[in-house]
Length: 419
Ligand SMILES: [Zn+2]
Ligand SMILES: [Zn+2]
Image (cartoon, rainbow, N blue to C red; front, side, top):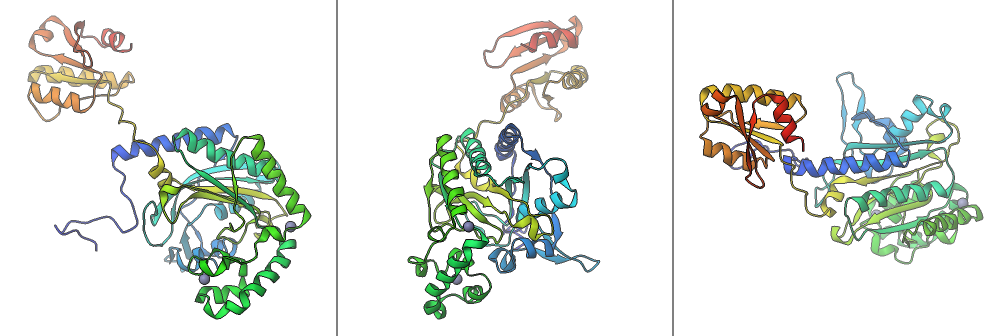
């Protein structure tokens, strides 16, 4: 379907067109994210749109649904396999290693606001090209950092006016204690193996933890063992510290013992933000600790932690759009000669830092005033033959209808409208 019923082109399925009214909301969201992340001393990274496919295969994980089914992978003219980034953590980890960023300081904190691409079924708040913001703290093993990350996301959602977010947390242990858990999980799954979906049959030998995340087999896993019952002392301590830090911050959380994350690299802390308004797939964002990833990608053993939030989903939860901010001045002209003067004045207003516009369609005075209303102008400046001859303009405050005569030089006008 490239065309609509009138034979006009339409946008590609899963992409979204953002019109000016909605763009205001997006800008607001981006500003609040930036402000908060900078307050938390996270530095912005801007990521490339595509990476070598291998990066995601290796770090996100070969047997994840994301890599197996959802990536936009293509071959460029040089025969390289490239993938439009489906998530931010692998590119951030790559940049961290490629530029030796650990040499600058042992703890590096980054955030990004980026477009991501996943070929999944488009549904409410889920698109194939979507926007995420994320934060990554590379170098800290402390639960303090996990709590800080969680709090930064909650602060942002709070400032956006989003109410009713629920925070779920869990610990999925470390590679050491996971051995015993996987053993128990396999013992539980073995008798059910034939009834599991094809992917899970595969995962049973490659990565059984992944099965806990399967949407198809969810009901068969109700009584499955959970990682929390098998975590080692070290992981246990880390998890209780996390809870303590969240308590310090007065952050309300629910321990969801079934929570695992769909990607390979997570260890210890996992968390997600959910909202009942979003329906069955109620996740707004989430993340966790990924202590193994940097080493796995060829770096030194470096603990790390991070999260990502779907901005399209956040937008659904934001209260009513603030109205598009109107312009400062609309210039109304009453005849051809005045129109030229008005046009020059318009340029001076813009140079002077005011948002300003005028009619360029040769419309009547009445239509020009209607346009000034439509543009929600604070002031209109009216210039006609009489004003021209006397070297003045009429300045009208739209809200009150008050009108005043002002000398037509830009300084006098600026003096009047700046207050
Ligand atoms: Zn452990
Ligand atoms: Zn399955």
